[in-house]
Length: 268
Ligand code: FES
Image (tube, rainbow, N blue to C red):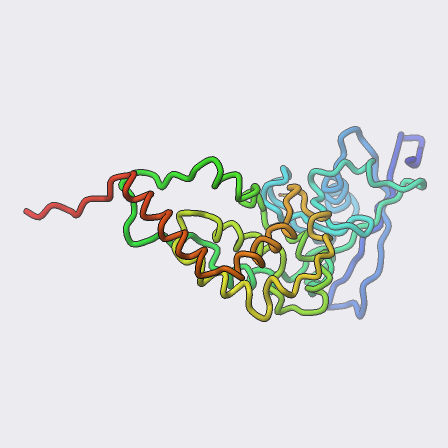
């Protein structure tokens, strides 16, 4: 249900505010905005910032669920603001409540400090490390190998999963579902040459065995990915790390044999 005014339908947007320069604790502001067909939650925030309170602070960039910057907490659930119709999240009184993502320090209003999130991401070396011998042409993966990645490459690093993980709430050293999903992607990629080193890292004190399998990360993911399943796979692979490394070496040899190597540069 939505509010009706003489101008048409409207919605009440409750936004958590906090400016560390002047506020001692967060509080809520309420704004009434016109509700047009197709209005998204991000549109509502833009309407408030443009026409009612220019000091409202939030992150956004692409507006198409690609950049991951507009993740926030809507009525208690983490999601992207740019791909959610506002009307789908209004209660019976036509209200919606918007907070910043949990478990991270607030910089201002809906903007949180994501330093710990990115530090954990860097920790898993989120880049491929190829073997010394590489084929002349592309490093071809089989359809089964692509399938095994479970679309992990679609992760947009929005942080919705990280900020819904109760283990993160207890232990900031935990690598987190976002980085473990990316580690899974690199470890399962046959072009990568250090799966053993990666498995040793994710099986350490702050890694996959810390996950309590609560499934919040799955519920929060706007791309319908499954970090919990990735973590479960990493747990199993970590227990047979040496055999997995040996299999990877054999797989890479077969790639080199089936595709010509880059030839040495010709001397004069
Ligand atoms: S603004 Fe880029 S994902 Fe929402």
